[in-house]
Length: 317
Image 1: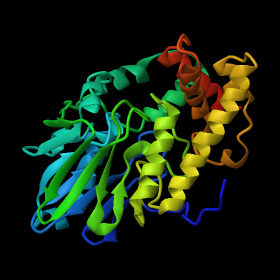
Image 2: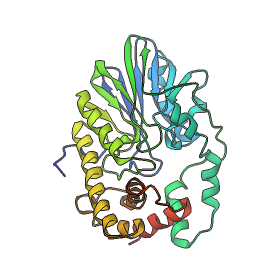
Image 3: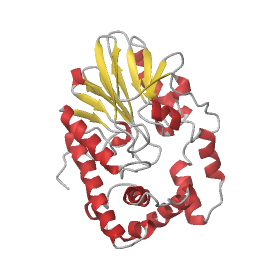
């Protein structure tokens, strides 16, 4: 892993990036603590993602109100279907909500109430504690899922008043329909969960090569400002970090798959090395399983509860 100059330390709240761009950051970037963004044009704004529940989204919108009072939010982009990037959509009424067609379909698969139910399960003490630490800080019961009104595949261009924004579909990778929001005039990109900075990425879908290709695409944009889905704002050094992890893990998983090791045992066996101090390192359980699906079309993934149980086990080693 190459050296990196992005600071691990960052504060919660709205950060001005310059040239009419803002990031809303939520340390420590772990489960549910996602980032969002605001792209401001002449008299209007585009919001990139909402947050995991209504209280957090209200807090964010209040923090943006000094800006959006004179440049109202006229459109909302959801970078993907995970709830920490779209469950607050209902608090941005009467705007065009834009996402990839794949994300729009996936949003129906895990409604907020399903996470509420997950927290009520009694699996075993270790898994119960892990689930509550991951999702207990959030309130899902009162959320009304508010889906996209405009969907696309491939690329979609839009205007925020006087400035162009290009939406680029790079999924399936983290999820089925990940997109980037590129602002060429500001040399900036909002990546959603294609980037976790100093946090372990989680491959819900894959293939991992699509994710590596997405990192290469970001690098090819030549941007100087990169707002990840989780973690501190970075430059292209952050992209290199995530790409390095994905390539390293694919090689580690390939060696163990060739040796006949199960996905769960491979996740237990891999020494994290340079990545051991990234948060949520136990996500390797999901990641190895996803990579095994690429190696073997007949590979059967464990159920969600079993996957969380394995992550809980690894987190408590």
